[in-house]
Amino acid sequence: MVDVLGNISLEPTSKEKASDITDYDKKYFSEESKPKKTKVIPLKKDSKRLFHIGQKVPVTISMDNSKIEYMIEKVEVFDSIKDFKQENFSELGLGILSENQALDQTGQLIPYRRDEYKFGNGKDSIDKLVDSKLVHPKFVYLTTTVKNIGKKSTEEIYMHPSIKLLKSEGNAWNYAERDGIAEKNIMTGEVDYLEPHGDGKSFYNIGSIRPGETVKVNLGYFVDEDKLDSIFLDAFRYSGSSGTENMNEKNRWWFDIRQQSK
Image (cartoon, rainbow, N blue to C red; front, top):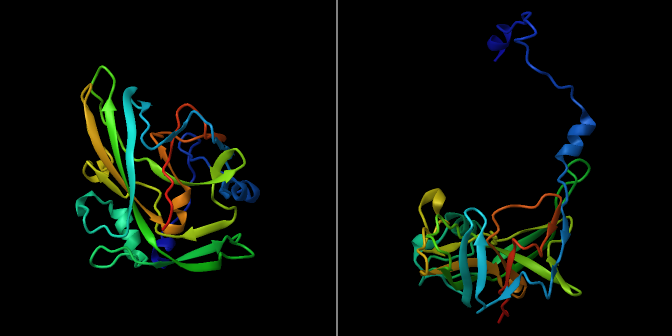
């Protein structure tokens, strides 16, 4: 390293070849590094964007304007994944289970320790462990159908509806996250099991569907037992929100899939 630095020298250059420089502004960069909090308009309990198990729901896929009909036929909860095909699980979901020692060699889901942290500011305080409890993970399995109700074959349909935890606030549902608190748990929020699915980076691609054709799609999620009564499916959302997130927007499809823990 010393030899390299010793061979570095500064030479004059022309204005055309010069590189732009930026003055360091501590205040600017410190403000930029702070995460901007998105304002959320909660999901009304009587919202037209909230659907239920057994309900046939028309959906327009924003990427190619494909028109489909989506239905969640049933939701089941399992203590083991031994009867499900290994190749249909995502590597991420299984990896997090393994990391938390929440899955034994027979495919049985076993209790693990879930830690809860209070965020520090990174300057005067660090993240602090405020709670730790033993919880039982469950495998939530959805049997769903996708029907092409359009006049042309769908192109690629990516099935990656995420599970969200919502809490009741008067006549609405809102995200259950608490400010300044984070949990280290086994829930990815993403699809942990998908059948059918694509390969590699196209894992969530269920392929093309002909007009009038109905395809059965099975989805699975790992969820902590004490969160089963708070789970909703946020489906067919292919773009984020800028500024304010309205959970009732017409391009949102929410499904109430709450289950009672035993």
